[in-house]
Length: 332
Image (tube, one colour):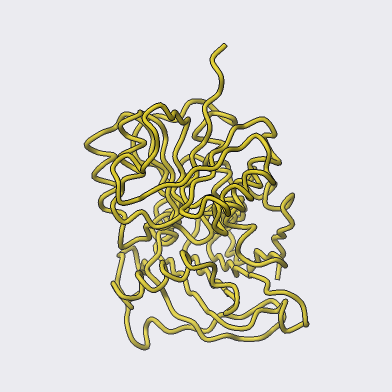
């Protein structure tokens, strides 16, 4: 029997990559992993803690990532911004799945074109908030409705939980491209700026934090998955309820749904997806869910082409995994 090839995690020693690797190790103890980073000592520390993992250095400026020709992998995860797309090309040339979380709505065109031109293996674009878990939790809650008219997401990110250097660089890059937000209004995808983009995000403890609509993949994913004519995603950065209580930074995603129930009566609900340890565990679960599915460790084979989290993953299963990781979905 051929020995299983490892999953190559680019940026595997960073917050998102290391967190996802730890979740994969819990779910699949024998799954081989390759932790790739620029600092070999840091990558080795992560690999040693995981077990069944190796550490390598990479050079994202090189077409071969600086890896020896004999290296083989079962999938490539870009847990950092790959500006040259060498990780994607590395995966395409070897015919293995690829997952990215840092492209953002404004950066996905090259991945889409690559998937159209070279459909040899699946590409999972998971550059949604927390790698798509907010979308999946929303779709799980939407099953209560017969028709969805309005989806409004309000994410509260603690100002001390922006992420490591890679996460901060992502936010700076996205904000440099556009300060406009993308919404769906009366069935039309629309860019909003100025006062139209501003919004308050209420936390579960009653505090209100000013935020604004952002350009994020969650909007088209939710709009097209549910058919909702009105969809908006607002992000607020400030003090989280966890820190207000004197503890560590927490994370909250407020999910407001409006529509009709199975009997045709008007129905509206408000839930909060929360985690006391901030964004890292949510993102880690999102990436791990994608890798698990791409490798066929759950579900059937994934066809070649472009995919998003909601096109591959079962929302109920995602919420189950989030709950196991310490998250909760609470009715307001």
